[in-house]
Image (cartoon, rainbow, N blue to C red; front, side, top):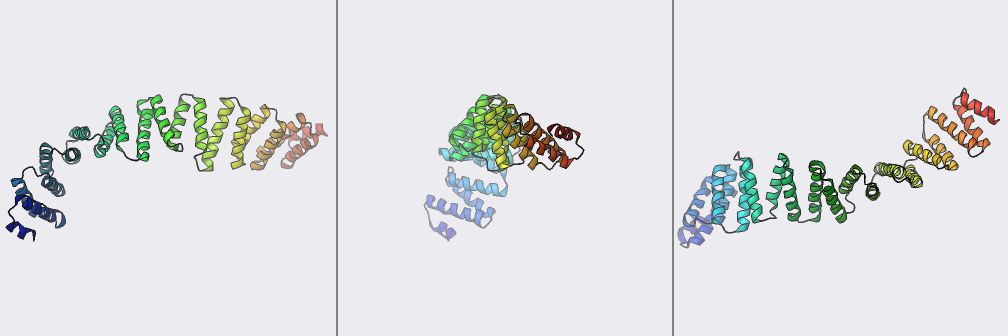
Length: 349
């Protein structure tokens, strides 16, 4: 029907429109590019600046893997069109072609940059340059293109991901700790539960020994993490900081008690708690901690050590001789020949 119409219609614009449809049907739908090309040639002969025909013909060349002809055609398109959107897309196509098919990847960045000059939010060109600069290790250029990416993406989530890339690059590649911290903080301000940004701040605050900020970030992570293992790890770090950096043993002990609420048999928490209670001369709490540790450990020698320590505190610090005797008797139940426990019992009796 289209070919019949072409024999009857004289208006060249209408003829070109029909020919464009016929070329597309032959080239794309019927997979007969050899029939499509003459239509495009006829269109361009009568209307050399018909960009729609050129773009369709370019798609056909791409399908046929005629990359040399495609490169020439794309070059013509950018020369004759005033449509900025068409120019932008064509320059990106030229960059892809140089990079992937023509064996001249070094020419691709110039085409992508030209596209970005025409449209600063051309995401295709931005993503291509991002990949190129990352692969080549050109970190200054990589950071510049990531900043363009922040402005080009449309969703807040994509914007945060781009900012995380910027922060991680400053952290790992340029060594600009202050800038990395600032960008991670921007992400946290827009998404307080962003664990990637919080962990980034954790690493950097620890590196520069900014203890107050580090403590705040760890506290924030406690509200975000989901697993018991993660919570225990954070609580142990916080306990160590409260003990060593801020010299607040009471708060450190509270954190360790939180660990034991999650895992009553956590040996490191029990050991740390015993140390804190002994230093603070909180003898009743120390005895209770020993008891919990005894219940938690399956190790016979460790139980013996803990019973002895418990007996010593009950005798020397609490003057509770009956309970001290019970502690040493528990040692004898485990090892009837323990000289230290036998000697302590003889003195107590």
